[in-house]
Each structure stands twice: as C-alpha cells, then as structure tokens.
Amino acid sequence: MASWRQEGKIAAATETRGVCCWRQDAKMEILVDTLGIGKMRCTLISVLDVKKEIRLQGGQFMSAKKLSIGLRTILAVFTLTLLVTAASAGTIKMLHTFNGTDGDFPTGVVFGPDGNLYGVAVWGGPANYGTVFELTPVDGHWTTKILLAFRKNGDAGIYPNGGLIFDSAGNLYGTTELIGGGTGGAFELSPTADGPWTETILHTFTSSEGLFPQSGLVFDAAGNLYSTTSDDGPNGDGSAFELTFNGSGWTETTIHAFDGTDGSTLKPTSILDASGNLYGTAQTGGAYGKGTVWELTPQVDGSWTETTLYSFTGGRDGANPVMQSGLISDSAGNLYGATQNGGAHGDGTVFELSPLAGGTWGETVLHSFRGRDGSGPQAGLIFDVAGNLYGETFYGGADNDGVVFKLTPGASGSWSETVLHSFHGGDGSNPRYGLVLDAVGNLYGTATNGGHYGDGTVFEITP
Image (cartoon, rainbow, N blue to C red):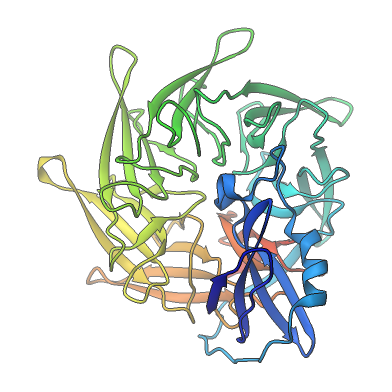
C-alpha cells in the first residue's frame, strides 16, 4: 500500500489500492480501490478513529460516501496489482445489504431474546445520522425493520457507535458519539405493545466527564452500566464511567480519568469479571505510546483503582489494540484480544494475557497476521464451546477487503489459523465490529462497506 498526504488536493497510489488524504476544514484518510478499468471506490478509513481531526466546524462528520462521488471523477485510473491469499474455508450468506435509507456503516449485531438480530448503523436513515435496525428470519430469508432513525434536531443524539446490549426485560442500550452540543450520550430503546420503540436519553456527557463515547455499554449484576469516553475528561485522554439508576433517572460517575501514561483513545467495549473488576484496552498511550490493557478494581469506599496490566511496545508483541469489542476472558482468567498493528509482519496480532506470580501479567502472541490471511484487525474475538477463537480483520485477504478467521488451539500451545471467508466488496468489505455465534455454530456480523450499494452488509458464515 502506498500512502502520503497533501494539503488541499487528492494524492493517489498506483497500486490495486492506496490511501489518499484530503484536507479542507477536516482531515481524513480515504481508501481507494480499483474495481476495474476506469472504476474506483473511495471509502473513509476508520471514520470515527481520527476523533477531532475529522470533525467539521459545528461538530458534524464528513460523509465519505458523499465525498466519494466527487473523488471518482478526479482520481486517475489505477494500475491493477494482483494479491495472493489463502483460500476461504467457510460459506457466506448475505442477510441484508444497506442502501443508505435504512443505514450506512453498520456496527455489528446482537441476538435478541426473540432470536432476531439487532444493530446500529453510524450513518444513513432519513437524516443520515444513523439508525437502529432489526433483522427477522422469515422463510429462509431475513426482513429488515428500522426501530429508530436518529435526527439532529431531536434528543436521541446522532452517530451511534459501539453496538447494543439487552437487559432482562428486552430493552436495548447503546451510545451516540454526538448529542446536544456535540458531547455524546447513552440511550435506552424500549418496545411498546403496539410496535414502535421509544427512546430515552440516560445521560448526556459534559467535557469534564469525557466526550464522544465510541464504546458499547456493559451491565454489572446490580444493573449499573459501564463504558468509556474516547476523549476529554479531567486529564484530556478519556475516562471510564458508571451509570447508576437512582429510581427516577441515571446518575453518571467518572470512575477513572486516563492521563496518557495509563492509556489514551478509549474505544473498545470493556468487560467485567465475577468480582466486579472492569477490564479494557486503550488504543494509544502507555509506556511506549502503542496502547495498553488496563484493569479497574472497585474499592470499599466506592473509589476505583487502575492498574496497567500491559503496555504494548509496537514490536512483535503488537501495537494499538483494536477499536471495538476489545477483550474476552476464559475460565482461568486469561484475557484475549487483538492489535491493529505490529507483530512479526506488521499486520497486527492476536494475543493472550495471563496473570503471573507477583501480580504481573505476561503476553503471548497467538498469531501474527501477514496480509494474505488478514491485516489490521479492528474488532475483538469470541470463543466457541470447543475453545476455538473467531475474529475478523479490516484489511487483507484475497481482495484486501478483510477476512473472517478462526484460530484453533494445538496440543503444544500453538494456534493454527484458518481463513473462513475473504471479502471481495460485493459481499461486503472492511468488517470491524466483531462477531456473534448462534446455537449451532454459525457466525454473524457486519461489513462496514461494500454490498450492492456500498453501504455495508449483514452476513452469516457457516464455518
């Protein structure tokens, strides 16, 4: 991949794909794909990963989809370069392809208690500020219903990012990156007897608490909600927070303010263990500036103590933990995750962190990506009942549109990787929000781009 930046104009690469940076009120990196002679596709890379740099005056995001129309008319024809990749081992089925009116840039799915799939799209809908959607299986296919379309002049916030969770009563919870004056918030969606869902704002963040939440929420056993903000807060590097229901509303408590030395750029959803400790990752910061894994432990006086479990060096151990669905744990208390960069080939890693004597933690790299088997993972992992790990990468594979992969543990502690599917654009591209499993072992997820209209897809993969 070739990439560089130029002020006020387009820079392009003479390969199958490249990166160009366009700056004018805003900064953004755009992935440029050649789709054939004289055809190209432009996609904003990690639109919500550049934080303030891509916000226009007034706090609105620049839509890469709109920009790509103009870019296609001025970019030169690229030279086609073939890529070598491993064969795919799974079977994919597209459940839905977004067309903009129902959503754009979907951010993962979860199963509801009714067996339907629920998710959010960052953009799209009538006002292009994002949607909450439901997919229902009917006679071998899936129908799509929009539960909520976000509107800027409403109270629902805009640009949902980070996925959804259910409570035991069937209500949905999530976050929006902007709300009110542009700060971000947490929301609840509740089904009604006559069909429509009603939305309630649980909290609107202030600069002193932290801004622009891009993580999903997690419940503890008492029904409190936890997550992180990606920016600002007392030290300017984001914060971890708790939302507690007080009988009539929700109260926010900042339980830790990050300062860069313990992490910065907090985006993945955190996890809780049985003792109520909160674990998560920071994309940057730490001892080497390449990200951290952290733990927050509740104290008897109501405060929380932060411990940095691991600081990535940016070398073979990996760099920049993934931006979504950060960590999972096994029954022994080991933590598993992925990094976007670093590793033996610079294309990211899958890692395990294990507690050691004396309270320290040790890291083991389970797999280093090398491009043809995946590159730049941006979502966390899931386990199946047999102990296999599944995940996805944003780039790499046959067409550099990303892959879904499986890691199988060996008897000697080694892990072997299988590419289950390599995306090619028509079935989606750039998956980045993680996977879910059904009862029979099928995988479900979203591709943020690609599909029939270029606005992303929901897919099912049978391993």
